[in-house]
Amino acid sequence: MQQEHLDDHPDASMAQALEQARTDLALTQRETIQAIFKTMESRDAYTAGHQKQVALIAAAIAEELGLSADDIQSIYLAGLVHDIGKIAIPSEILTKPSRLTHIEMQLVQQHAQIGYEILKDVPFPWPIAEMVHQHHERMDGSGYPQKLSGDEICIGARILAVADTIESMAFHRPYRVALGLKAAMDVIRACAGKELDQSVAQATLRVMGELQTLDKLLERKF
Ligand SMILES: [Fe+2]
Image 1: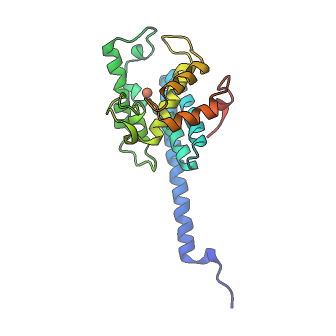
Image 2 (image 1 turned 45 degrees about the vertical axis):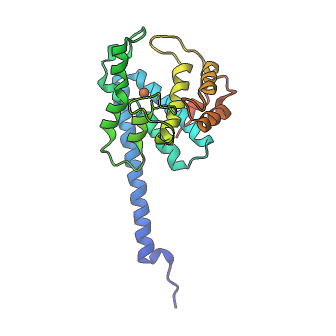
């Protein structure tokens, strides 16, 4: 009697088809985020470059924390579009070469909520919209827009907060020159367990605490 091959079993082939459909859907969603990123890049190359670097720094931290490949991927993708809400902020404010006024700052801060509104109805298998919404929240409740604290902030947003801080300090800003990686690490050390998540900050210091530059890390592909 011929032994039935596992792949010939209807349940096995259905499971295979389902797995393939899941893989295809994940690929489509990944490409959708890449398309949003490219759209933003054509409008505002500066913000897009910042997002790409934050995404790569965040992915390296997520890896050091031992998160799953799927979680690392989702944090990378959220990083790529985390400032999508800035599309609604006048570019004169985003590129203003001097400090922002209080009113301008309030306007810029709306980008976290706007980004969430743009992404919230897309059925991504990952909490992309939540990460975007929460990336300016702080562990001690001093962030925005919802003034969340501690465990109310998802892990992806806690990682993006650290990555955003590093990128903002290590690189040039329209209103100031780059402060450098060492200065960024000093801030991560000082804010660990206060504004920034303790374990995320520690993982960051392990991965890049001794680096002179982020060049190698920013060449990686995810
Ligand atoms: Fe932001």
